[in-house]
Image (cartoon, rainbow, N blue to C red):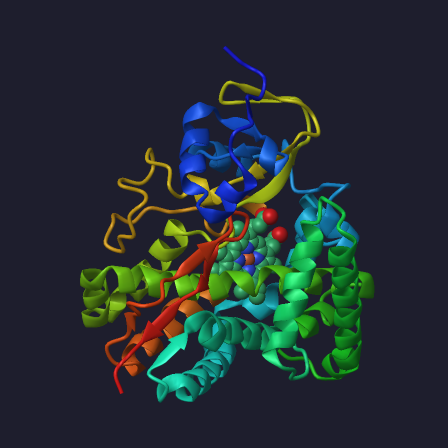
Length: 393
Ligand code: HEM
């Protein structure tokens, strides 16, 4: 038997921001797809349904002509299907190759992390969002894109303004102004380095774009760099903080990973499963279709809640628990299908092999503070927005 999309009116937007997991559980138990009034979107929350959707990009399109992403950032391959998507994806691929990550990005990112940890080491306490995770994510992304050096805060501010603009469904004029200003500033920053990258091929994303065959047009470079700024900074930042939080809240697991460093990759995967930095991303039903008993009409916008799927009890036992020793099982934190995250391997390296091991090694007896608690927020993007810690001299 099939039904129309059920509607839920008693989940508030604040509930989703504060702690989306009770709502996710309820939605998973209700139906394959549920319209949530506060989110103004039909949400898909079960692991199997999202996997099915991502295996069928002809039915569930990433292309959305009315998307605010296109308006704020321009036409990006991440919101295209088929050949248009593949050309753009191929253009950036050289910057993300395993050999490039190992030989080129590893030493650079290690040096950035060493410098940040050296700067805070003597203080014996810090708020890790501002002191480590945000600058680390920003400085690494700056290098990867191939921008001239700038304060880490500048790239972080652009990133936030672009994300806010892409989610500005209420058409708030100030949010729009800031997004458009950030967009213009990014264009200027690209312009300042493009000739350099044309003349000096190198592993950066801008260099990959201008040396691609065919070279990416300037309009595409601008739009895709903006999406990468919007999508490549928050996630590693939040993954760093989530992994540290998971370990600090679970001393036995922390002791295991410190005693057995080969567990770091499992710890990283568990962190992004437990609290997925991208909790939801959009798709569009390209035709009338039935999804596990619910009829979705053509052109319906749906939100794939990978943050919910990664806590689906049908896939993961005791899903709300951080457990790096749980049986190995693939998750959806990096998406699936043709749009599977291009930054997966570089994030595994940065977070799971560089930042977290170095932090626990260099800050002796790292621990949460008794007098200040971690604060987490978000559902589209989720992670700690404050992680106060202390350690021994
Ligand atoms: C822990 C860190 C990260 C997580 C959890 C993550 C998650 C994701 C997810 C869920 C998607 C799919 C979105 C969609 O289909 O609409 C995605 C796509 C993408 N990500 Fe990441 N991301 C991370 C880090 C990064 C980094 C550091 C970069 C770049 C330096 C990056 C670049 C991209 C790109 C280019 C795409 C689009 C791929 C495509 O459309 O073909 N990501 N990411």
